[in-house]
Image 1 (cartoon, helix red, strand yellow):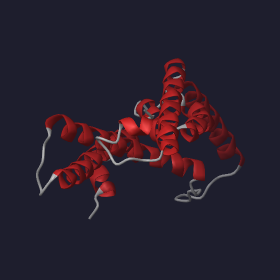
Image 2 (cartoon, helix red, strand yellow):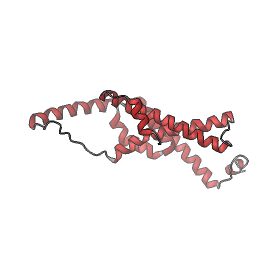
Image 3 (cartoon, helix red, strand yellow):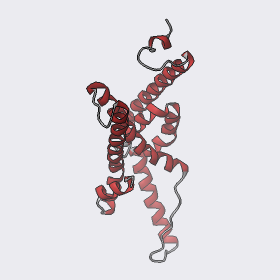
Image 4 (spheres, one colour):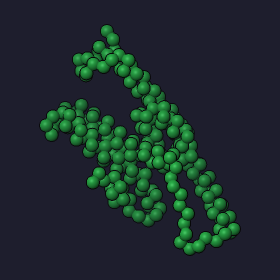
Length: 195
């Protein structure tokens, strides 16, 4: 009996190669998440939420998340963050001594692709957790509403993904907004509202 044949009673039969490649990818993704967790134990991220975001991202992106983590993650460790703060303060001090800046003039730069990709992982990780929680909730409780199991899954997937996404974005945005003296909860809800 093949691996695909053993699943034919519970799900739509898929080709053997697809089932095997799916299990290989899931196993590889889990291994990537474990590698990230081990590294984060040695070098925790400056933003605590990132200690959860990177491993969760690895569960659905696999080796690409591991590559992204080792490319971007070390730049976000507490030690690196403190070192960068010292360097920026020194650069600002030297720059302010060398040329005065007109009042109100602020130099702004556009975010890099790396910054945008990392920023997207917060919501992606929250949504992934919401989807997984909703699927397990329906599976364990055999809960149905809205006309059937599919509608129940879709509704709960959306609601929990949205709520977890808001939570992950909140814990990303809140520390920055507190520093700026703003209320984080309202800003987070507004940025993630589907309306």
